[in-house]
Length: 386
Image (tube, rainbow, N blue to C red; front, side):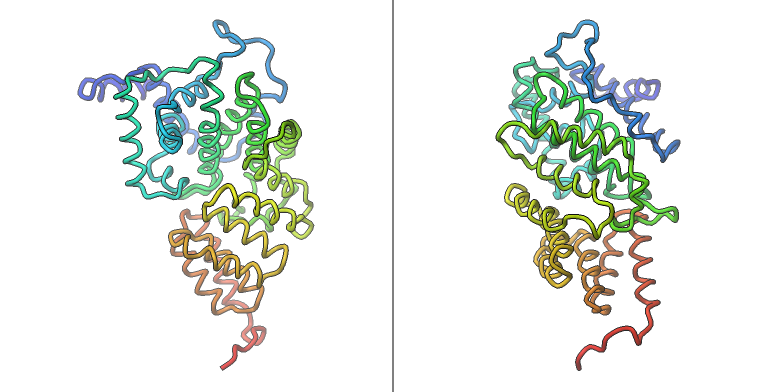
């Protein structure tokens, strides 16, 4: 808080005080605390950081049961104002409340940083022109803003689960906060429901794998190589509980579909025993809703596991033109090419993935796979025709 006050003293006299000074100070102080936590801790007892499944009976003094009693969740709803388009709401929320940088937001939304910067300018101008105060909305306005809040929490979690750049792959504090807020959303009387429970399930089940995302040598660890006995059983239990709660109503959302996939991974004893055909079929439904190239790539990987390396490679190759700045398509193609004993082509893709890798653990993984490829005896490789 001292840091936030110093920032205010240095900037407000020149730029003017923000519309909501207390919120500004709270967000700056929170971001400073998270920066310090990143340097102080890497292993968090994730389940212990989260609220219990059963909603609390007592409300905070001054709040009724239909009001938001979580300050950060209230801020998310405040900035997701209907005067803004959905893309502006999410972008503005990620920047002003979740504390992500322009580059991180651009990575999560698969957009250029200049595009994100322009969106932020437009959002501020539209709010100012409409003279919209940044304040929590009344209870009956919460449902229409809830989907934008869910999307922002999902992208906040994604940045924590797989960082867009830097020395670390995982930022657990972002994931913990996203899970906490998603579960608060699922328990609030005005925002709870199947979609909110499905999001909470998705984030909790995925967060269960955080401890195994990076191996002891600091390299990123693929799902099939992760020691599943180290997955957080408490978070898996929380996620499955929310998944069961989400199975009501007649609307099937993208959050339900993604949560189903996360649950299939969570309950499988190994990658080989995972129901990849069901996962591939679920991704068929996802890409009908989410046309992003990353969803198509995830579907391609599932097809490869379900139908074989050749089918997976064909599906990955169809995605590559849309993933020119991403290492993941090349890494997936390399994995299937290695299975097909086409090591020369695999090397080319691994080298490209290494050049595009976002974080140090990802680069270490690509370097390790390239070294393993070089270490294979030449006699073990099939001769290519010609």
